[in-house]
Image (cartoon, rainbow, N blue to C red; front, side, top):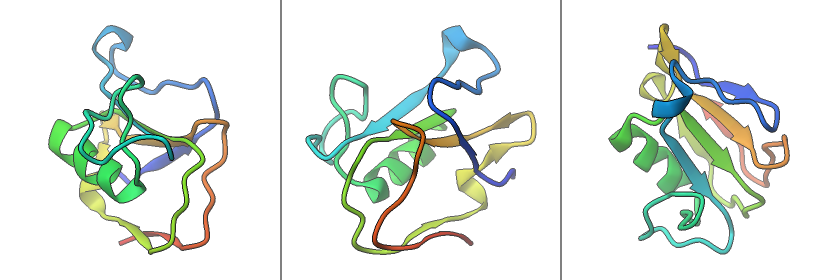
Length: 102
């Protein structure tokens, strides 16, 4: 498994842009939502779990409060041929709790 990568805004890292699977998370979302641009998730934890389930290529994180540590493991990085990219909606991932690679 590849280590998750962090990218700048507007970057898409997919083997095929037509088949790119993205998961979105924003403060106005819901963890019961689909995780799409139109129906984002609300927490980074839910986005991590949805990305694992969907084998997403990109996870786009909007400004959301992060109050508990987010741990990303080997399964969160995709594969060497198709790495999973984590990026901030505006280019920055930051929060009050750590983002750690397990």
